[in-house]
Amino acid sequence: MASSHRTPSDIHPCLTYRDAPAAIDWLCRAFGFTKRFVVADDDGRIQHSELSLGTGVIMVSSPKPEDSRLPNEAAGSSACLSVFVADPAEHYRQAQAAGAQLVRELKTEDYGATGYMVRDPEGHLWYFGDYRPGEYWEQG
Image 1: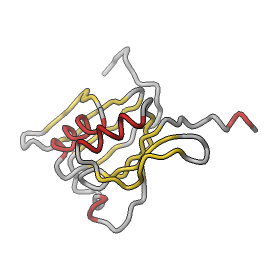
Image 2: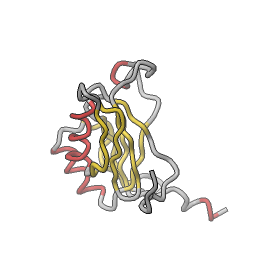
Image 3: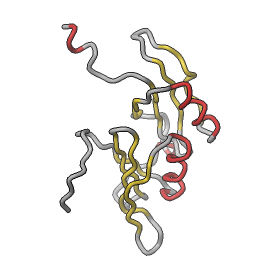
Image 4: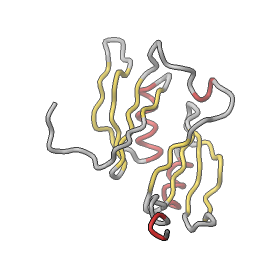
C-alpha cells in the first residue's frame, strides 16, 4: 500500500475497545481526533482503524481472542497516552462536555507544562497538555 502521505511519528499506539465503533466516534467528539481509515468485518467489529490528532496517530480495534483484559476489566492502569494540544484549557472544556472522566484537573506542572488527565469510557488513561518531550534533552 504505497502512499506519499505518512505521519512523522514513529510511535503509533494501538488501543482495544469492547465497542470500538462507539469509541471511535467518542474519541473524535471528545478529544478532537479525525477518523482517517476504518476496516470493519461483516459483523461490524473493527479490525483496524487510524485516527489522527495533529501529527499523531492512534489505531483502534475491537478485541481479538489473543488480547488481554481491557483497562476497565483490570485493577489499576499500566499506561497513559500523552498527547500534545496547543490549547489545553479549550481541550479540557471539550473533553468535559463529552463526559470524559476527570482523573487530574487542568494544572501547570512544576516543569512548566499545562495539562490534565482523563479516563475514556472504556478505561484508557489520557493526558492532554502543551508539553512536547525533548526540551530538557539539550540542556545537558
